[in-house]
Image (cartoon, rainbow, N blue to C red; front, side, top):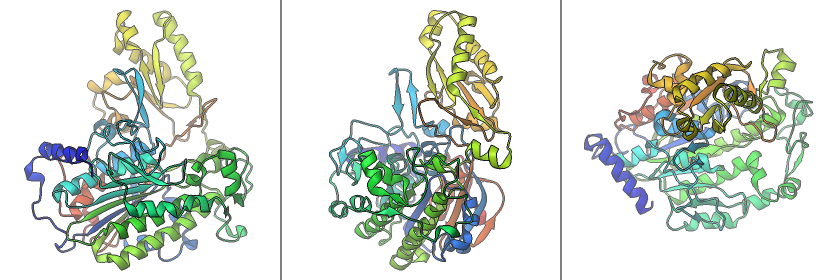
Length: 546
């Protein structure tokens, strides 16, 4: 951990106060796990567990469900549902209004430019010559689970994260982690940032020298089982599947062909081979860093993201998705076997969850089920809105930036024209509310006046950050999805996520009541016999505890 991160820990300790520190909290206490292992699967629908159940082996998903505490109705209610917003919310236990990650990026009014949630050129890449390690958690405004564990053990615990995507790795690791590692698409190595790592570990260098990514480019992705047995999915050549690059949508898939087409290793992140890399790296990390081997509890967050970006190209009902989960089931079994043997089930807390779920494409819902859904064009809507504003207020560039489900006004122009921000916000929200496919649009000024702590408006209110969010925020109707003319839409409105606790410190139980994703952090802290900070928005899941 760098000196800068140690300073961050000290600052947070000062904020929280000395009473939040357990001076002698060690994992030698009865039922306190030596290792917390969070397995996050991007865009995992909860119905995948039941859909593929008969094809899962005994040691993966089935082990977690049969021996763990299963929360059947866990929801992660966010205005903008992205991997960035979901990861930050899960691992801090607070909503974007407080942790500040309102989207992958947002408009900074003072700097007059869009700010990426983790990009930070103050730090450099460790393990590569590329710029893909110029990342940090400085824009994350709240401590993560890992940060809290380190604070409570006086920085004796070890905290790590591993993912193919940098956003997942950084936002699950937090500020004070000993290491966060992700995949460099240029050279196929696992890398980090000087924000976390001063000297690149020798074991990581040796792992990279084995050239896993390069080796995978010589392989084909074929189905794990005979393709005729994939009865839980639509046909492999389903007409509505766009496929990789809009042209490859049937098995087998040539990784060599993908490599020649893309020119880098990015495509591996969308195949099961990406999950294989995370699995092997994680096991190497646990061995090299001796996680769970002393009296101070350690923390490791693993994110599996294969097929998340290609979800819209194939859909949740595709053979590709089913095969990905059957292979992930094997990956999880190997990881669970390792921790059971090396550390012991009695000494490990495992959590399976997801930073976001996935949705069925609108074409699929309409064609197969005649659902009243459709596509919403933000570009067309904004074009009409601009005409409306010009008619109402005169000619001008009234809209400065168009973000995901939010608009930023040109406040300098509003001031120059002596136009009330509240007035233009209200008129704009009322105008947007008339569009088909819009559930609701709200002016940001209303959050200071109304009570939106309950109901569907709370989803937007909890995600609204005064300094980072837009001036008008809107939600689409259920099942509606945005489409853009020249870019791929990454959108989700399914708030249901998996949440399973496994280990000797939890009950084997089915919990059917509705719970929130922000309950994860306080529940882990309670299991670790550590105080739950007052800023946490969630509650301890008492049903999980033995």
